[in-house]
Image (cartoon, rainbow over all chains, first blue to last red; front, top):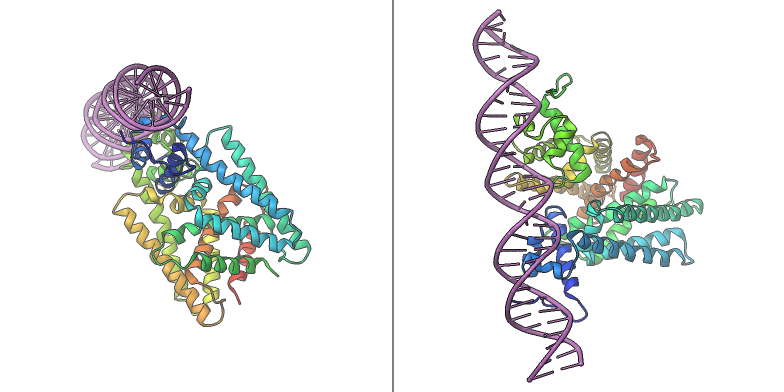
Length: 196
Length: 196
DNA sequence: ATATATCGCTAACATACGTTAGTGCAAATT
DNA sequence: AATTTGCACTAACGTATGTTAGCGATATAT
């Protein structure tokens, strides 16, 4: 009877959640079974339920912890007294760093939220919609101030966010450039594409 | 006993495949059941097997028909005697139009190929890898010819392809700009971001 | 009109799944 | 040292899943 090993300041639940992130990314939420998860944690499937309420709870946990991190950062950046295009660049860099360092969670939150159940589902979708609107508003400001090309702001947001999720391919690729180089390249192309 | 209705030049299998595309996009491959599909086709689940071999066959069909269309177009564009940046723009526009008009299939091919089985899986992954390398090669040429900024070509490819998959959000959004406007905006930002 | 192939139906299968109940050991608390 | 709590185990449940078998009706070909 080997217990789940925890490091300092991590509960057993944390261990399960982060193993779940890996699994959900690899296989997708639906295709990843609780028995898979149990194996990767080193325990029987039923034992997981001493720590979590349900499989979906794992997805909530992942999706909302990521969403909250991004929302908080947006609050912070929005209130800084800097030009719109610099705000966009900061947000972009934050997304990139998050996607590089917290790959599994961020990826799952981005791709698997469909499998949330109501009321969490509509909640998440709302947050997402609002988040994008706030980004679009920053871009609109940048357009008005002639920092940014005259483009459709929602389209620009969509490009930015999805381009970032492309870091998935970087993670999978064999011959990776460094994370720093990746960041600079992405900023060059994307901020360059927006700027007049 | 109502038969599956077919239009001219479409087999009953075609009907099933295209309904499957819709369903696989909505719910994901794993979460979409054959009983769901049967309902959307207007038939009992078992009846589907008079036309298809398996659920996975539906995914093959979708993934490879999309992949082949893109490969063929790339062949065509690669051999045109035009500057690299114009090739990239043409490919970009093709992707956008495909994603707009054949949304369901293209989306499924892009997001659900993980659930293919070998040997189809490795096959598909190979095609994908090669496709991206060919795009990267075009970009490299553009860089050498000083049409394109000095950037990491694979990163540029990753941005382009993933940005395009963002058209998913456009499809879902309530207040859509026109497809033509979407295309122009995307080209402006992305080609603009690459060009010196 | 008759024969044949097509195709949708019902019934059922084996399997995989998420999850619960109940037991007993080991760690934490007193 | 005694007691309580935490946690992993085995066993099993109900349900949903992909798929097959076999029957009968309808459309197609002769």
